[in-house]
Amino acid sequence: MDETMIDFHRQWTLESAMEILQHPTVDSRIWAEAVEWLLIYGPAEIREILQQASGHATLASFPELQPQGYAPDGTPCYGIAELAEALDISEEKAREKLEEMEEKHGIRHGYGDDETTGLQ
Image (cartoon, rainbow, N blue to C red; front, side):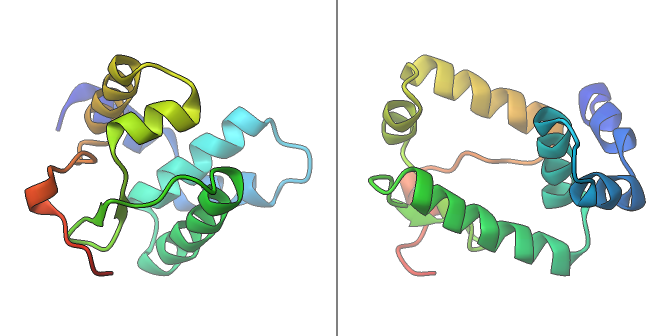
């Protein structure tokens, strides 16, 4: 395990992340980190709920952003150019962020066209 990934994994427990999600006045950055941790390390039922909520939030916030395919686990995949445009950042910055997330989480987030399917 990479040291960055170990640090992120150890940063939370299921109990602490769930407590943050339920707190009425928690800082949004801390709340987002708890959600991120739960999406990676939480129980399957919680990950499923958060993934559904994420899909709804993406659709509401970025209606023009459409998945170009789906990863083997069913996660929607978006093109780097489309993500960068939706977030108003450069493609280079979007790639850097993707690489940072992969290093932090220790899992792959980027897929090529030949690794995704058009069906969910």
